[in-house]
Amino acid sequence: MLVGQMTPAAHTRLGVVWKCLAVCLLVNACTTVDGGAVELSWKLRPASGSTNIFVDCDSQIVGTNPVTRVRLDWQVGETTGFASWQCTDYHGVTGFDLPVGTASLSVKPECATGAATTNTYTAPAPEQRAVIVGNTISLGAVELIVEIGTDSSSVNRCTEQPCICQ
Image (cartoon, rainbow, N blue to C red; front, side, top):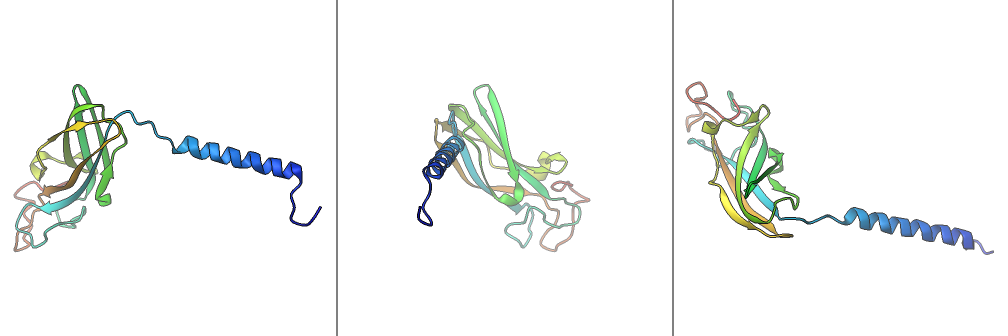
């Protein structure tokens, strides 16, 4: 046998390895698609006259704590569900988890301690969209207006009014 040639037994073993690898890739690459998905991006905008158009998930303003997650809630008929992502991802996509039908979709910020108090942010009104198996609904860019407690003079007002994730 020449150097670099494989024996028939080695050739057979290599063929089995390749077949196993191909089967593993095919099995793991398949995803069951039973419903629709939702995709969105988000930005946080200060509620008051701050000089910044947008703020980070951690505004680093005294009296506020970071927005840790952004949550998407959905309701299709009697079925409800949600997905949430790290706020600093600024983008999220669900699995194909939403059942077929007309979905009511809403977005809200979350704090490390749980849901943000409703008087500390303004979210877009819930949207209704048709869910179709295998399709992705795009909500586009969503602005969440958050109360960070400063005005154009940078005076902290979190003692006068509730601030996000206070």
